[in-house]
Length: 289
Image (cartoon, rainbow, N blue to C red; front, side, top):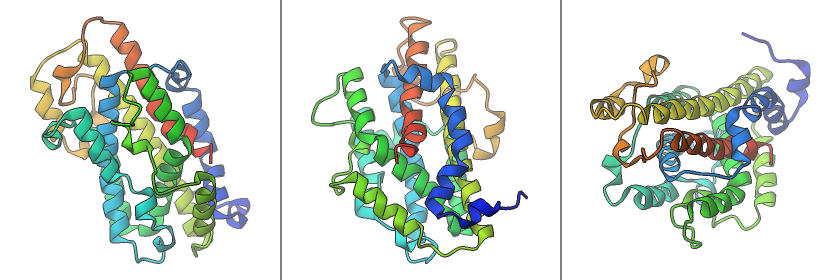
């Protein structure tokens, strides 16, 4: 195991996390996802798929936060009213998938992999939970309003914000001041240099799990326009997380009948652009903090 470096040992936790994830941030920034995002094009079908994955991810994250809300390794960062996203995502799921969304939303292998790691951390390594909360919440809070406006324009969504509740934090009046408070609380967490190192490594893992998710969804939707086999639908929903490394482009998420196939090239381009949009929530958001 890599030993913590002296510089990281003396840094505040918030700065150590930002420093530790620079390399993986550059990898994401140089990807096709990020280049296409600048064009501001977002497809509805791709957006729905990624939002469904975020619902599963935040459900798991917030279950583990509730489990550890009184644990001193996380308690100072417990801000359910201000930050928690599950209720907002439930509203978005109803908007995008209808009243029976619980039975309609996809649950891809990479999403399962991410969820599995969150439960492992919350159950066995709660001191690492801060890495996932930091990566997700402050990233989403930082980039949320900009991304919301892009999505509204690109998909002609209602100005009232329907379908985009995830990006709205009604209990936070001043995001900048709240992020300062959150970082200050992070820096009060007591941890040894070894634990701090493990936390920074977990933050990199969180970033990589997000990249893995978007790459998988791109491959799945790419194949969607080549193979409309209905036999793949239920198989994808039921695959265990342990099979994530064996995922192939032939697997297709549930709800595929709703994906447009009017053109073999345009839907693919729009999907790549969609991934860019959602990846920016993680990659760009963190570094806007």
